[in-house]
Length: 318
Image 1 (tube, rainbow, N blue to C red):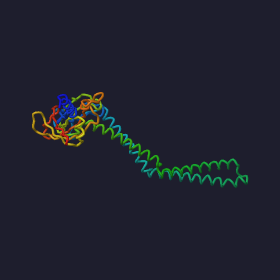
Image 2: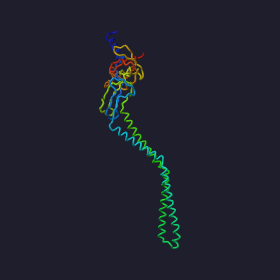
Image 3: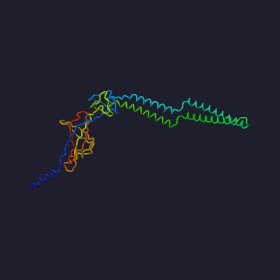
Image 4: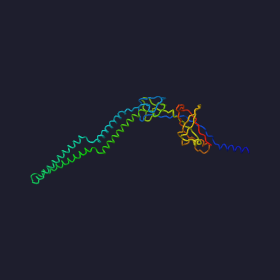
């Protein structure tokens, strides 16, 4: 076999093999951090933690205040109480004294109607005989009609007093009472939100406010880190990506440390990074990398944020 043929075969074999896949990837450890701040502009009254302090869920971190909060809350409570009393009064209906008064008014109106009707009945035969003028009879009839109208009106008043408010009015009053109560609860919730509590177990990694400072809504006052949940993002090629699944366990080591740390894949990127403009050649395809997030459980707090960590990648099975 000629030398030229041997060289051609060697080049062909190297081209078939392609670039070697890495057996590990290096990432930088990060720490899950939670920013805690007021939900609306407020002034810090007390800050109860320092950087490095351990905290538990529910621990008080800082207390804020709003100057108009107390007055607004008192006003909302007063409106809620008044609306509730109005709704209860409409549900209970009229008081017994009001019913008795309406009954007395009706009796008086009925007596007046009976009297005027009797006057008309007495005057009619007298007018027929000519003993009384027709004008007097007409006046008596008008008085009778007025008295009958007052009697009918008194009857309707008594019915309304006994029935109480209409259902629509009672429902409207109940709805108004619920709205006023919700407004009062909203102010109480605002007061509760001004007491900042730790949402997680962890360590205060940053104290961003001092007593007397005013923070905007959503601005971080305290940052709580979770050192027991470090994570790192590594980048793997397309060949390695096909062997990884979310939830898989990978082994990692720190530089100069023989201890093995187990991590779990929690996220795999769906879009490649470091991609060339046109990925056609084999070398360019090897430049396609995908981010993989690996989360560790570090109860001994040996994995520090900012430290590089080497993650072993699974090898292809033949």
